[in-house]
Amino acid sequence: MTDASRLICEVFKSPRRDEMYLYLDKARGMAAVPQSLLDQFGPPMSIMTLLLRPERPLARVDVIKVMAAIRAQGFYLQMPPPKDPEVLDLFSPRDE
Image 1 (spheres, rainbow, N blue to C red):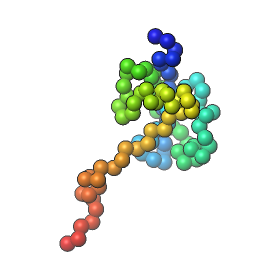
Image 2: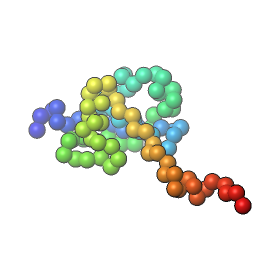
Image 3: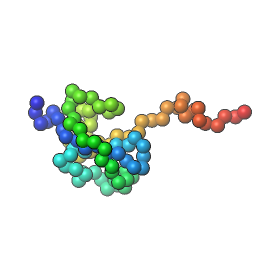
Image 4: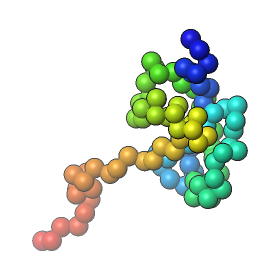
């Protein structure tokens, strides 16, 4: 296995938005993350360190896309999943 086929990644969660995560190359840290993103993200809270490998999938994102983004721009931002309209409909007011 070559170094290009794996990446030690640190994952941070946003204190401001549920289910928003920032994936970084652990060795490079936050240096490549734009300040404007950090301002919106809030103070990053480290939640785990992972060894990313193409053959080991992640739960909600494509590991190959995550690795490519980290290598190209220094980070990968995982946005919260879209809200399910059927679930939201349960909580919306109804005309009676």
